[in-house]
Length: 212
Image 1 (cartoon, rainbow, N blue to C red):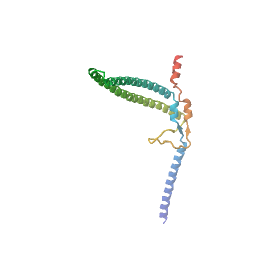
Image 2: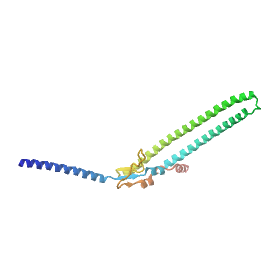
Image 3: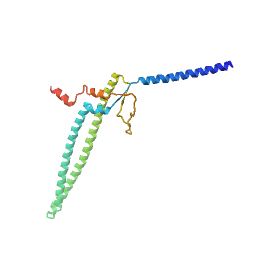
Image 4: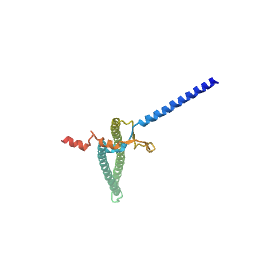
């Protein structure tokens, strides 16, 4: 009986030690979690306030104006061709015009229609080509700007000793906010807004400095 009690006590003791270690591990994990320093940041606000973003926007708006001007010029050319076609139609419907001249007009009208179709097709291709090119440039520039902003956020986080920085404006593929709740997180957006443009003056400021 004594041996049985001894074995039972040993098993009980081992179980208690295991439980103690398990709870000790949980406590250590909780303490580790408690020591984590977490921050949130509004990347969209930083992006809008960043000088390179404003410069890029101004540049693309200027390029868009140039494309719009070219489109208007193409439209004006199309209108001229349409007017010429309308004039030919009126002449073909005029009974006083000789048949020989009408035959020449028919051929001329056909050539003019082909010209109008070619202009229409070229105009549509031009718009698609320009929109695609500008869209690709915008994506590349945005990626570069966001990379710069992430670097600045990372440096700030390292300086301030943060373990994690979460973008509170980030959304999932279903457009649901990724960050719904974070306990005891510090919002570092305002602090970064004060320094985000350090070393990156706006284009207008650069031009002023270069003139001095």
